[in-house]
Length: 138
Image (cartoon, rainbow, N blue to C red):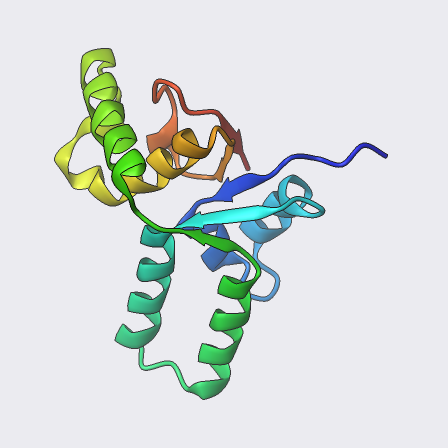
């Protein structure tokens, strides 16, 4: 069997993996299993924010940390900032919804995938038609 290449995982997909019996997690699993996984620093921040907002106890937090450790977190840098800026321009020129101001967090996730040249595993339609982004939908 040929090894499959790495992927970037969207926040919604990684969050679903924390929910036992999640339909989204079950749909995403075949796209992720056996592959190196990356997540944006934005995804790590969003998941920790949600956990803190809901006052997760130590058991839930350990489970979250185990899920975050499963992936390599991609931090920002000048290259990622450049890709983010260009992606927003490209989306705006193409009329893609990802260019809209309220999708700033999603753009960081998309820019991470574009910067790494990897497909993004996502269930979120906001990523459709984003120039330069390869999406593996669930």
